[in-house]
Amino acid sequence: MRRHSRQLGFTLLEILMVLGIMAVIATLVTVNVVGRLESVEASASARKISAALRHTRLTAIRTREPQVLVFDLEARTVAAPGRAPEKLPDSVTLKLFTATAEVRSDKEAGIRFFPDGGSTGGRVAIAVGEREWQVRVGWLTGDIDLKDSARERLQ
Image (cartoon, one colour):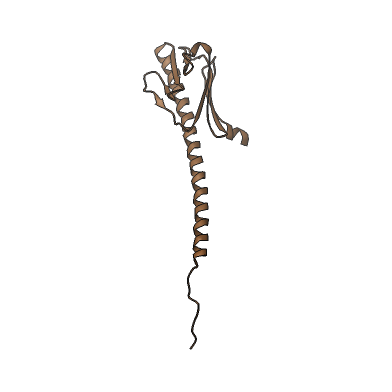
């Protein structure tokens, strides 16, 4: 009859190493998920602004009166005619480039559309980290174009 002097199981050091590895993996996954969530919020904001611009243009054409999409950079809102202002997430950086005549203050400006479909033109940049989305409005035609910097780099 043999006696086993060793007991089966894990040492405290082995358990601590496994817990440390799990903590590192959890941290990496969390950072990756949060980064993607911010990217999704920025992309959704760019699409929301693009839709608000299209709505404003169509309203100008339908009513035969100039219409303005108003950006409040301090409150981080976008207000289309006949709609409640929409709040943009704090995680995104917002920059507006528009005609000087459409600047109401250092915190508020707009892009105006005319009954013929034309506009004052402009560009809205939405960024998170190094990734940027640009919504461009043509001044002559009022066409609205959404560009994603990451997709342009891949092409």
